[in-house]
Length: 209
Image 1 (cartoon, rainbow, N blue to C red):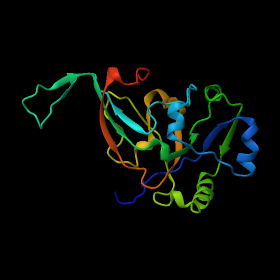
Image 2 (tube, rainbow, N blue to C red; image 1 turned 90 degrees about the vertical axis):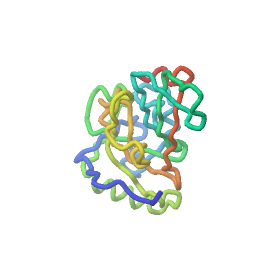
Image 3 (tube, rainbow, N blue to C red; image 1 turned 135 degrees about the vertical axis):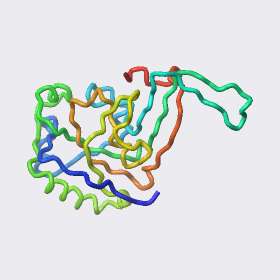
Image 4 (cartoon, rainbow, N blue to C red; image 1 turned 30 degrees about the vertical axis):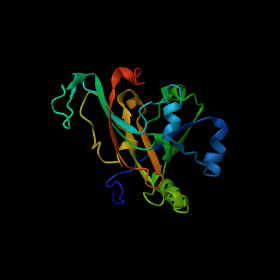
């Protein structure tokens, strides 16, 4: 895959970061940002933060799927409940998340008592890019950013699922009220899409609607 960047991504005029008060000073005064990898959010069980689908897009049709083995056409096709996944390496892609909205409910959902408003998003991103430019591990893709693509697994995807630059931005529609805008730092060669098919009943996505 040729190195490339997402294009035509406009920053919101305002961004909101829900954060515990104890971290506000280091965030505002020192500019300390804690990027977490996608695996962290897969394992996180906190409501509002944990997401089993981080780092992938799932296509789970309502109707049974038919799979035919073309190398042995005489074998009968498999028919059953399955899902198609387009995924990237979750350990090597790091994110820092904001919301585009200010909401009392999000304070509760993120278990935070403070919200920091970014009034000049362009200046914020400029300082962030400058800091990242010194980190060799992230030189291949640089800083990616954009709003989350909220989707239902049984409906058409809102963006190209074969494009690895899109995968870190997919979120299940149940999170749409968070109005997330995220900054993404992929390590070298981490944005390669792996396609797979899973047997629904044998996998661990039972909690995903």
